[in-house]
Image 1 (tube, rainbow, N blue to C red):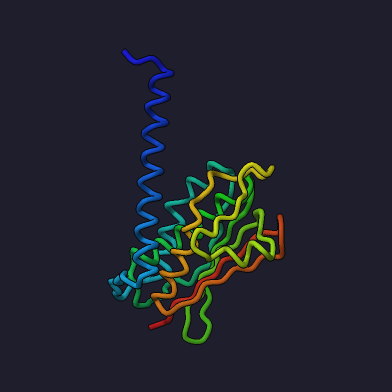
Image 2: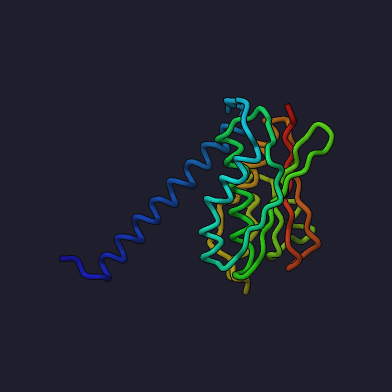
Length: 196
């Protein structure tokens, strides 16, 4: 029979292995994107449905941090896109909002239609970005150190998430940008996808 200390060590090793696997997969994906080797499987999909699906998947995680996620979405947003890749984009932006917003914070996600594009925006009232941090947010390995600085944030990332997110949006002929008025003033990440 294993004692609790040994079980705890085994669980830490297992969790560490899972984190390493995730990092390796992100590195491989980043390499493919950097070499323009990733092919999209675009089909007619509903962007609004996909956003709602991502929100429903992550509401539990936000609830654990006592955060609320509010939505203001169009009923339908039909477009041609790779569902799995755009799922990665939305999930990454929502996960970042959850990770970098203090417990009790608010996150909102909304859709807009501007000219020939759908705009999806994820807004939080979290720790925000300085001007210098904004400049490196979408760069490869542009990790911004936020852990251990007195903010109650979740586990740090790899510095690849926003780089990959940007590349995936650009592969769909869209754009991604962020707005933040500085430290502790929240952040809004927005991306555009062409309408069909």
